[in-house]
Length: 129
Image 1 (cartoon, rainbow, N blue to C red):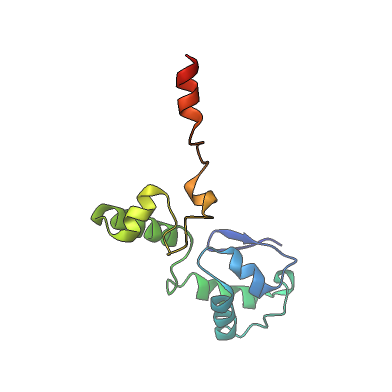
Image 2 (cartoon, one colour):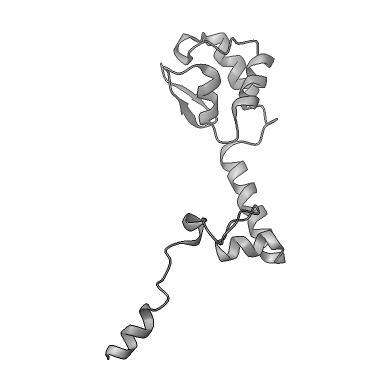
């Protein structure tokens, strides 16, 4: 039996509290809150859930109380776009592709900054030609 919630197929062999985190916007703590609210044991596996439990869970998750999946991705993207437009510090960091949350960049941050270019490499190329 395949279980779909908020457009995401939940893995059947995982515990329900872990499986809910496959939905973008639901982490461990929100997963626990939702399960407590609909009175489902968090140790149950997805395949062990009955129809009534699934209906209660689906009603709670898809009720509109939570911003999930596409809507949340859209909201995050629009927030980043706004920061870029108003040219605030975080927006400039996003534009330049640098770390946004205050991490050091003198060393580290290679993933965010991209591949480094050798300093003397360009000069030697020009001298040879």
